[in-house]
Length: 317
Image (cartoon, rainbow, N blue to C red; front, side, top):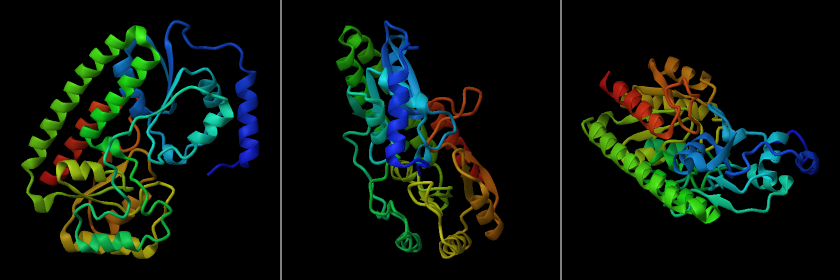
């Protein structure tokens, strides 16, 4: 939620954006702004040395609750291209674009994906469906699930959209963008096959995971894992005591042992679930943000490798 009123927010950012007269960008590069680290890594892989990249929500940041800064407005004011996830993920982006005065293209990286909806059962059992049905207060109930990058097939569509946008904005380097995108796409496709082969070896009745918020349904659909979460699509949501109790009962009844915190969320709720269900937290999954360069998930590919490794270890324990 914004601490400033909408009018004050727009006025403050617009004033600071206009006041900046000395661009920090490299003059000979395409100036690209991405909203969060996963998009930033994709853009870097495709754009390479031809782009000057700014990413608004940094490593381990939560884009659901992010509050834009004057520096963000200045970055947009100087940009040639802005890349967003879409599907309602960046609830603050339209205000920021307006405040900055940016008039260029805004590329929605998720265009063309088959979006899941918050009310979908995703193949879960009836007890989980009931838990979701009880979340009437969740403002995101029934809306598109924005976490589409959690399926590598969708990630490949993101990369294709980004490559087309870069080529259109910078035709002089279009061939390089297409070449780099094709090489990156091959890496994503190979990793998807590797993940499927690794997880296919896990018995279906063990493929159940608890995470902090409902960010992994695309992953579950793609790789045959049943994800559960006490919090809905946005980290702004808060579960009731009844919803937490229902999830604890389900964990006990079904013997769900794979329990993870997320890098962007407060771990206390997952710690509570672990205590009440006599479970052990398996580690940290990266959901909506990459790690810093020295962490275990500094790139999109590394994020998947890390998450799958952690999940597979929990299944084996």
